[in-house]
Length: 334
Ligand code: PMV
Image 1 (cartoon, rainbow, N blue to C red):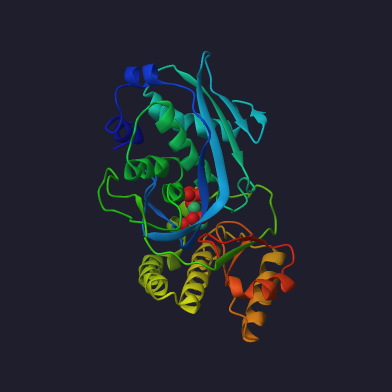
Image 2: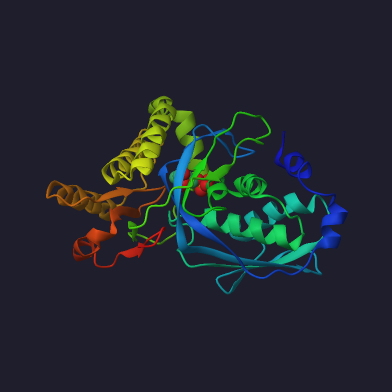
């Protein structure tokens, strides 16, 4: 099944959608940080994963997007106040996503999108970006879809975007169906006041290998990858235990080992895929040394050089004394 067929089955006809089109207010979706990573697709067309994943949404950090139908032949796309030329990768990716909703109808849209996180720097702006666009299109076309359907649609823009439809802890069930109708995220009820996430920005530039190509390369060329689904499924069980028991040590150690296992599969791919920079490794070594000294501090990393620290609010001052530039988010408040 291709993505157009999947979306056509969920939406009214192209004419009905175009007639309903209206300008929207801004819609917000949070960025999310996976503590059990999504890495590898069983279906690249529908962004269906090989393993389940679990994330924490980043509260106020994310993307705001509004959509408006316009006259004209092409979409008019704005990112952080700058008009994007239609031939840029960014504009093309958004327009291709909107094509799924247009279903061949010529209606064009203005899309104004703003991130308060660096774009494409491994801080998951594509997740919040596609989730916010999905929410805005749902409003613009008056679709009134339920959250699970929105999560499925967001997944077609970027896999991890299916988790950014929700706040708090979110699990993405990998599903088994060919059409992906059972592959969407859902929220985990648990709260964890005082859980802190700190962002270390090693490099905010656009990465050279995006996660789509990185995953494909790993699945095709890395023998270690065979063990990845087992690692992810085992970690998922441990993370549920950690969240249920509010066992921070279990949460942090599982998330860190999960991230390093994913990076091990990247590094052992061919050609090798190393997202780390010298400063990334320096930060890891500092974290390991601090942990030896008794500070409960862990990290996770996505397909980029930046680290996301995991710690408890009670250790905020201690962590800040070692990482003074840290941007701190409390996804569940104090
Ligand atoms: O959603 P994508 O295609 O950008 O993939 C995201 C992959 C990771 O960020 C590395 C892991 C994850 O689960 O977010």
